[in-house]
Each structure stands twice: as C-alpha cells, then as structure tokens.
Image (cartoon, rainbow, N blue to C red; front, side, top):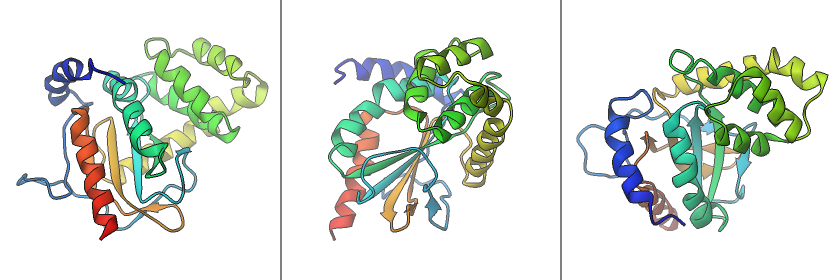
Length: 226
C-alpha cells in the first residue's frame, strides 16, 4: 500500500510525543522496563462497530477522535495495512470506539455523536470515512451534509445528533478513561474470546511505524497457536 509511510511516520512520531494524541505504551513481551496497565478483565465489543470475523483469533479495540490529526494519520496510513493483512484474512476483528478529547478538540464530541447516530442506523462506516476525510470541517452544517450524503439527513438523525448521540459518545469516552486510555489514537489488542470480548494484553497509543503494530499482532497470533 504505502511505500511513503516511513517518512510520514518519522515526522509524526516526535510530534506525537509532545501532543495529547501521542504517548506510546505497549507490551506483549517487548523489552521495555515500563509497561502500561491493561484492563484486568476482558472488555466487551458487542455493541461496537466491527470489521472482520467473529471467529478471528485476535481482537483490536481502536479508540479515536475524529478531530485528532494523529488519528487521521493512523486511519490513512496504518489501519488500511492492518485491514488488508489481518482483518480481511479473518485473523483479526477490529472494533471502533469513540474517545473525543473535548478539552483539546472542540468539534470532536459532535463528530463522535454523528458517528454514534449513524451506527444506530447501520451507516457507521460510511459516516466514519466521511468524518476522517473532512477533519478540518466538522461544524454542524457540514455534519448534516455528510449525513445527507449517506442517507441520514432526516429529523430522527438531527434529534439523535443533539441528544442520544452525545450521550452515547460520552459513555464511550468514559469507558476509555476507565480502561486507562489517555491519548488518541489508541489500539488495545489481545485474544478474542467468546461472547464478543477481548482480553487486552497490549496497548499502543499514538502513531508508530507499521512494524510496531504488526509485530504485536503477530506475537498474539503465534501465542494463539500454542
């Protein structure tokens, strides 16, 4: 896919270190003295938008903010590669969770609400793609234009956008905080269990070179073969 990914990520990484969108934490046997706290219990993804097979060996929960530029970079440069290598081949199930950083991105909550409302109507991924394509234009009128483009510009969507959608987005953000997610983007990954649950053993936050993600996933897949 992207032979240009390395230069882009070399630029993104130092910026990520000093940004709210970017401290890196991971485990799965990598040789670092500090390892982040991961949830002690499996986390459910049953009501999350999903890509992939429920029979996959590994589950990844992606926490993201539609206004965060590093989240946009992850979406354009990393997620497509992971999708091609692991999701489409049935090895990984990818779940998306909203984590709008309201204090830093004033339009993120409303964008997350739009995504939540679209999810209720079976249009999440269409809205998801539109939001990331228009990160610099997430005002209310533009959100309604996106909704119209995916067939959701109606009174029910408008009502959800200013009510239930906000409640749902904030609930997901609270869940993220409870799981120890502090920065966006963040990928929490681990074995996929029965009942739509992920036993998280790795937490990668910020934007990293592709190999960081693939190495962690490959380790988990190898462990699943033992």
